[in-house]
Amino acid sequence: MMKALKCWLLTVFLFSINLHVSEPLHTKLDNLKLKTSVFLSPKFIMKPGTVQNNFYYNIDFPTGHIAIKGFDAEIVDEAGNPVPLYETYIHHLAIVRYYAPPSSDQKSKDGPNSKFVVRNAGVCQDDILNQYFGLGPESRKTRTTLPDPYGVEVGVPPEGTPDGYEEGWMLNIHAIDMRGVKDRSKCGECRCDLYNVTEDENGRSIEDNYYGGLRCCYDGTQCRLKEGLQGLGAKGVYLKYTVKWMEWDDSINPLKIYILDVTDSGERILNSTSPQGQLGCQVEYNVDSNGAPDAHGKKIHIKRTRIMIPHGGDVIYGMAHQHPNAMGCTLYGQDGRVICTSSPTYGQGKEAGNEAGYVVGMGTCYPRPGSVKVKDGETLILESRYSATTMHTGVMGLFHIFVAESKDNVHSPLLM
Image (tube, rainbow, N blue to C red; front, side, top):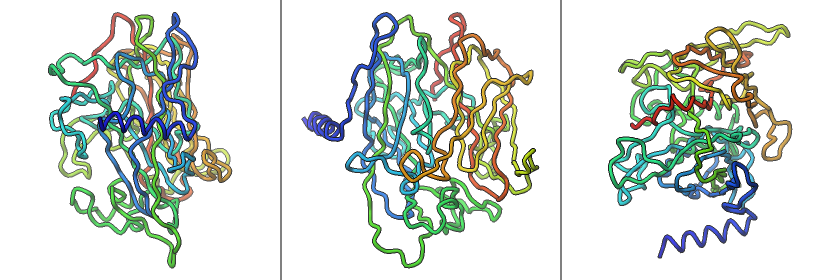
């Protein structure tokens, strides 16, 4: 009864802000209908300078054996209006697929105790960067729709899933309230001196040479505010996320999702002396101010790594995730060929989606099917570029590629 009431109230709210849930847009692939479903996360309260790093399990999501065709997201207020990044900054968000017993507790930060996470195709270690979709402040102006006849297949339990387990989706939102902060740029970079922390969220001491990053802006921390700030109170916001999808059909070609990280050392062993306790993908890194000048005299920091991709195929879609001061990412093949270059779009104004100084979009690649291939076991080269006129902390250089394997070379999803 309560669940039905909740669904009815959500429907009324969405209608009141002119959102249309699960409305068919057009027909492709032998009259299969592409559908667009719009959902809202639970409301979370932001106060000036505060950080919310929330994990929501069993979120609303299309169900059944389907093909996901796209995922978009943005922060909206209680009236459904887009919230600009200089008020609520999305550091990152991630959508993770899992299976769990239907009766298990879904409300804790860690989710059900007996859950099995179905990660993407790789390639980071353990549960690092295991999401299906992940964006940040660029989410409003980054194309995510996958072309026909391709899609991400979900709704079918991977081999080894216990009987009775049901598919669920987890949403992680890491947001920073920028209202009234002393320095928006440095708060967004999670500078430790502005957050006044000496330990990370796990109680480990933060080293003197760790100047900023996720270890300093965890859930509940507070970025320094301007002196004498008054008049700014708590604000309720939601993540509005849009899923494009269609019922599965054999004519759809399934895609594998790879998320590559420029900090990946390639090592997959525990290392208790490293800040994260492990080697491999560290997710973030710092940019010093010692970069070499380019042809225009601008100092650039370039970071590269080599990453082996286990299974190849046709690259159908590509896109990078970077932070402010980014200058783009390029993914190369083992022979030096360019697979995809993704460059940032910076806002020029004040309205949501065009905020000056923020990355409001990332370029995408849609190669003609069959024109860009990667081989099984090929070593790819990932390059991330940032402006190096000053130091920047906690930046990212991630690259997402969606690969269509040949029909004879399809591999099952990975359970964790």
